[in-house]
Image (tube, rainbow, N blue to C red; front, side):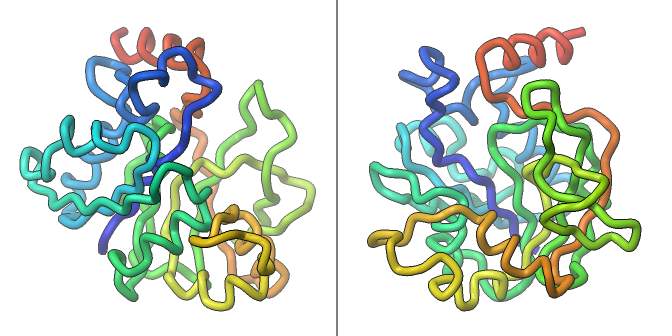
Length: 230
């Protein structure tokens, strides 16, 4: 299995910290956020990791090297000066990912979830890790049903943790779903593809009640850093 780390965002809510440092390279607990992921990916036996980059892209290979430090091979999916959003970013990285299911994790989250719990072969097109809605976004993203399917709406609304396993086939027919007003290269949100496949029961997931932080502001980064340093 390969992995994809989303790391191309502008980090606008994290300014001024991200004026000169991409958000996934900001430190918490003594190391960059993205390194927490790289260590876990290496520990579970993954060797090839694709990282999509845009804002201050040159800092990633300068900081992380080629991945050999962790026993990894890092592959860069450079999106140019404007990030392609999550859907466009996945589409842009697809040639580097191959045709097998891959693990996806957002570069700006932290979690103590054990990545080895994720299924190597997800039921349907994607398996998403869902968490309780955080205080800054209480509505939640999707509903997790008792049978593990994820719906756009329902009684048990949870927040997508930015972690899951995806089949590349999720991207098939993307243009019919998002339309033709996405630019070149295409720039669109992954959520449109997920929602399009939910009525057919192709999106599954699980609930995680352990540690998870969406590191979206300087305040949340400081809180996470203090917690990790104990």
